[in-house]
Length: 193
Image: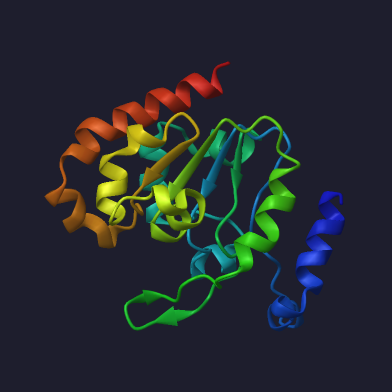
C-alpha cells in the first residue's frame, strides 16, 4: 500500500469517519528516509489546526532536548512522527483526552514497514511506552525514563516536554543533567551517518 492509498485508507476507516466528514485529515509524518521515529500521544489542538505536529512550546522543548533545529526536524526527511492516534482526541478534565486504544496497533505496523532506515524510537509519555515496551516498562513513566539505558539502542523513553511538566523536571534534575546529553549524542550520531 503506497502512501496515498494508506492515507485514504486511514481517512475512509469507519472509526475516523467523523474526522473525515469534518474535513480533518490524519496528522503524521512517515518519510521513507526517516531514521528516527517520534511516538507521542496524539496531535494537540494547535497541531491539528495548523497541520504541523509538535508546533507549540512542547515541540520547542523537544527539539531542544534532541539538539535539532526547526529546519532539520521538519524538512530533513530524517524524522517520522507517528502519534498513538493521528487525530486530536479533544479536551478532558485535566488535559487532552487519551488516544483511542487500538489506533496504533492498526496503523503503526503498516507504516513502519515502509521505513527501512529507522534506528531509534523516541517514546514520549506513558501511552507510547506502554504500547512499544509492554511488560518491559517499569512501574511508571518516571522509572521507565530513569532507566532509559535499558531500552537502548532501539527505544529511548522520554517524559512529555509540555510546560505542564515543569514541576516534574524540577523534581528530577537527573533528566536534563544525565539523560538529555545522552539523547543529543545518540541523535547526532544517527543523523550524521
